[in-house]
Picture (spheres, rainbow, N blue to C red):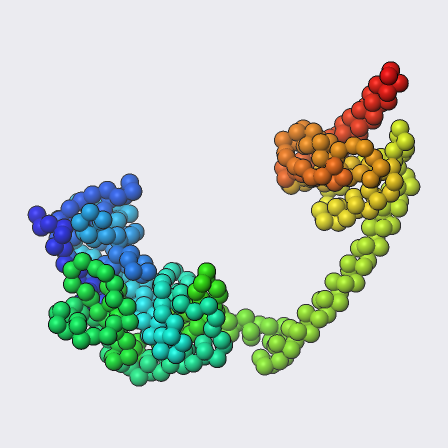
Length: 416
């Protein structure tokens, strides 16, 4: 058998072959899945910020391709075992070509950032949806991003040749690499015309024209750096289609032209703000009215006005606001509950009531199998499913305990 250490990684010199034959040199198991090491492969393993290729071997799906740490062998993780010693393999070409577009586009974009903003690329991530680079800049202006994007696309339209090879040491010494990593063995270089030279083991297009559009989507701070999200080629086209569909739909909904959509959105935002203020004022009026009615109808027990009430459909923030209004009335205790999938208990008391609501709500929540807490004046908790009948029962028990502890304290005082 051939040693896995000399398996020929054909993707280094040829990114375009989609089908190939190979001989199995080792069978193994990785993460409870069968895997093969072949004498040669075009499957790219996950490395350098680029995900692995996918495809099939003898019709069996290749789930993952990884580099074995102890000997750097390329292992092909499979959906099912393969017993044959000679195999036919086929790459998922749309996935491979997408990765080629994104990775080559990244090289161009990184060089454009370096030339125009002096910001080096410190990391690269190529995911199924998102493509990002982190550049060493704490702030980038919109004008800088536009200029970087323009330069990158100029390189694309120039249709420069892209070359990937292992230069000899004397040739390597003549090349100005964007970044030189520390590696054991030969260093692979990817050259994009005379625009960019960089050490890289990934798969790339043959000419920059194949990359298509390079579009920066957004930036955000990432520690001391700036994370730049972008799309190239097919991904850029798909993203443009999504955005165009959204804008076209907005224009149709607002019955206006595309250029008028921002104005229509701003108008809608202003109207929504005004409606929100009106709704907030109306809700406060309703809450004040409801609090007045509850206070008027509440019985006075042992000198305290106790309000016990439960609902099945109510906003928790409104319930909290109601509890605070009720607790503003002297001598008042509010025992409120909300039934449903995420039931809640909310207890509040006036400043002149000497009972700890946090202690009371924790005791009541024990019956529901839930937790909570708060302050002596206002406490709440819940989050479990409970029917209205259950919540009412728990509130009645809390009221009985409140009255009982009050009576017990008074009896104790008389005994003294």
